[in-house]
Amino acid sequence: MAKKQKKKKSHFLLLSFVSIFVIVIMTFTIGKYWVEIFDKYQEKKSLEKKLVDLKEEEERLRVDADKLQDPDYIARYAREKYYYSKDGEYIIKIPEE
Image (cartoon, rainbow, N blue to C red):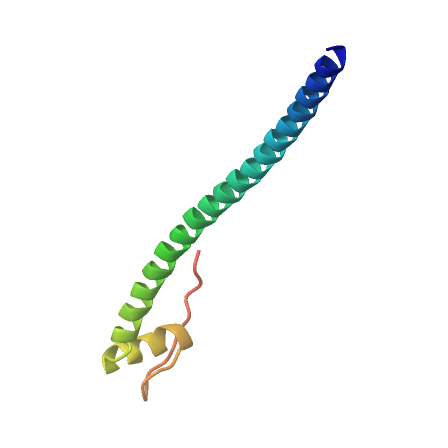
């Protein structure tokens, strides 16, 4: 009877160790996946913000492109930005403060 008791005890210890090992492995695996999910969530938030910024920039560029279809705007832009002048017109640059 003592042998049966020892055998049951050794089976119980083995089952306990296996159970603890499985629980530890599962805990680490679940933890690893939670970290990956959190990282993906942070990346998603960052990319959504970048998307909003890019859409705003796209809209600004569309407005600029539409303005560039107007010859009067192009002439004014060239005079202001690149100091182009009309015939008989002089450019005087005033220093900005």
